Image (cartoon, rainbow, N blue to C red; front, side):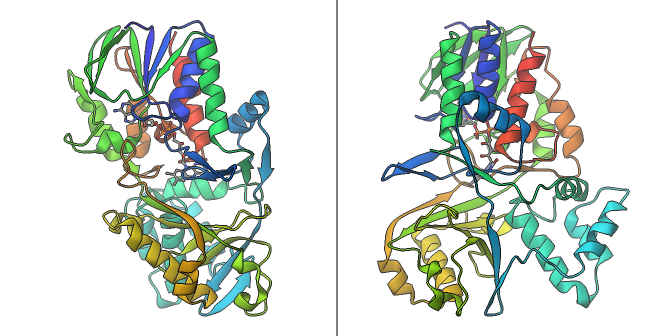
Length: 428
Ligand SMILES: Cc1cc2nc3c(=O)[nH]c(=O)nc-3n(C[C@H](O)[C@H](O)[C@H](O)COP(=O)(O)OP(=O)(O)OC[C@H]3O[C@@H](n4cnc5c(N)ncnc54)[C@H](O)[C@@H]3O)c2cc1C
């Protein structure tokens, strides 16, 4: 089967590139390994309501995402809500405040030579009085960026923190997948095809001539190919399902791939029979009714509600090295640990909590087929590696994905959409 451009992966990056190129009149075939589009955008519906197993928020007023939502006529709602902290047995509100944070940012902005964030805090803030600062920085980098602090670049985190738009958080009304359905429809209405259940195994290429063969033996031909699969899939060992082999090998690109960072995450979604956190008796007399986010030092440390929407869904998050350490844990073990964390925070009985569950999902993205991780973070070597991967190989092989985005919204849907748009612009 022939196309002008083959695209491997129907996530945000692949589908954005597909729709841009199809609109330019190119014949596009998108090959997607799974039986659904979306990749790390995975909305399921329960009682008609969207539940996001992957991406959930638009983290800020991000231009490409918001422009696309407007264009598609998809509404979004504010997800800005108060953050509570549970620490040493106490709930406190709006606690982003961390002792010595201003000094930390000040020193970080003076840093001239990039180093891992762990090295930075250890060398600049070694004293005991900074213990809490060191813990908070590590928790933030692991939790939010799902990164390993021993590998994450200080420069990249500095850039992210300087551009953070703390006020704005949005959710896509009806589910994030609506955005990707829109892109897929746009591609198809301009003559493109999206083929599901097509696991690409081998790519054979020479300048301006490429073919991709799937696990079930179908071969597709084109002049160019965009590889829009997750960084985790490019980094995994050869025996794993969905690993792509290049013929001839692309050595320089493979080295660059291995220099970049890809995080780990476990997302835990539990629907209870009622929003127990709204009950004043569990908040030590404080009303947690407006609680959006809850940070703790429990084994499942981060939680959020669907506030301001009324919902009984409580979402937990384990990121970075702690998620990696649990990559082989069973869903039941992770659920039990998550319930124990909730029980500790709200001083509830774990058996009672267990009986109040209506439904639950554990998504251990680190071991999930066709992803193998959460999203990218910058290592010290990443900027150079990204340059290599953003340079087309003989105007024939192109890479795309959230990990190839240059801006401050690292590891997001915005990053993937931007990369997809940019790679399409490089193809004449
Ligand atoms: C738990 C979680 C929560 C997140 N939360 C947010 C959030 O709130 N906000 C936000 O902006 N971002 C969030 N992100 C990040 C965001 O989801 C990603 O950055 C973005 O969706 C990545 O898009 P992509 O196109 O680069 O990759 P993907 O979406 O991963 O798409 C790649 C596609 O390639 C396919 N594929 C893989 N191997 C093959 C193969 N061999 N052959 C064919 N197809 C293949 C995969 O099946 C997949 O469909 C979250 C990510 C995770 C995991």
